[in-house]
Length: 240
Image 1 (cartoon, one colour):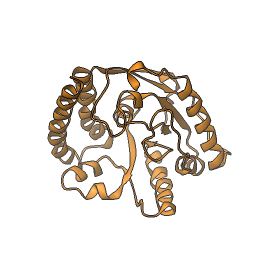
Image 2 (cartoon, helix red, strand yellow):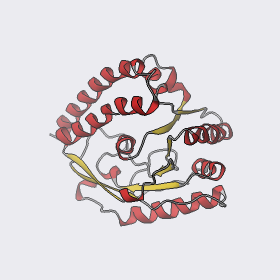
Image 3 (tube, one colour):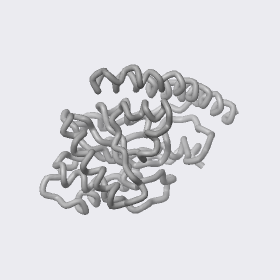
Image 4 (tube, helix red, strand yellow):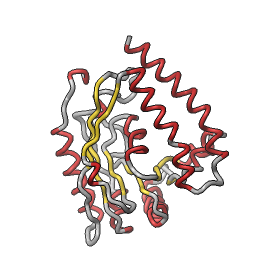
């Protein structure tokens, strides 16, 4: 039954993606904030469809910690769920993605309309420079920046080194960091078709100021907060 519900979810996801991709191109001339709102109606539908088909909901605490001005979101990365949820929980934002995705006809062009930070993943040094340069530009435009500091999805209970990109952006830009922890990996595991029913818990932490701090200090502070909160989040019986 879980497999059948998951397949139904993906059917809706693919259909909605085919529908929204050309719309991304049509709304390109509009101001970014309005364009972002229109395009993320896809996200709203997908999360609603996820609840209907798979019984997977979410709760968020710490919304009061979201500052009024733009900031850098540094979030734990366990599944594909947070890439959706962050879009509707936080203000309009730019995402870091490999530049090759922008070359895909229609879909990639639609992604480009959302002003992502496209990086060359063949060179670590070059990619960090692109994150800082383009990230500073987006923040100056009032657009938030989302960074997954571990660089890839990591299963619950496992841990990878936090990369310096987010800390570097914080150091160079002076904009604050908003740390985010959650337990989505228990319900939407990496490389798994199955979506387990339940309620994902997300916690938004207090703002971490970056002024006068080095990239290493910022990264360490973010890592300490996120990893501490992760241990406090519930480990659902449906997780394993």
